Length: 301
Image 1: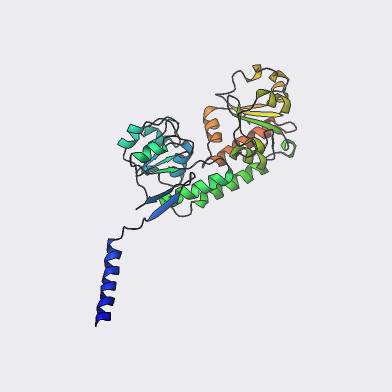
Image 2: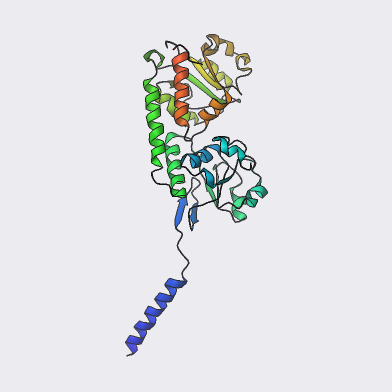
């Protein structure tokens, strides 16, 4: 009898413990900073502090969950109607808190993560720099939003890059390219997502992977490398030809520059769903400006 009572007591305690135990999180995400973030359900109110992350949310068909974005998020156009909460490096903490987000998406380089967590907000830090990063981040956001087959976005990008590569004339392949992402100058190196796309398009990046994805270069490095072709955004091209020694650079001397309008430049430097369009823009540039290429009538630089 005593044994039976002991067993019944043990069963009762186990049952009580099961009911009293805290509920398991329905969703767990490990972000790029190594933090494990738990959610009881998929976030419905999202603030994004990085344009590529906001674009990915929208590409997954969940734009309506965004309640605030950084000042640079402008695609798709509907994002321009949302409250702007500063930039990734200088976010408006008070405004973000007022929006009551279930999660804040930001770059790992942002310094605001700890402040937001201290205020009780959940933060997921994601920062794609390479093709593999872009693919992984898309899957992470798909997991966070509980969107099935987020992989389809990457399949579309991959197919578009392959098609863009096939569209480039054989004579344009092997061109030595310098891609300037910002004055400084900061370049897109071989190991960046831009550099990886250029490699798949058959171009040779003058900035080796050993220097990192987006290194700040000594301008003399570019002069010595003497690229055949320069890709640069309209915001950064002013004064480029007047830099010391740059008049002798082949790309400057032969006017082999692709100067991208602001909208195209934004597309190119954002590691997200529009990388497919970015590949087409760079392919068009190579077909039109690379030494040995045969320009196609009607193409713009």
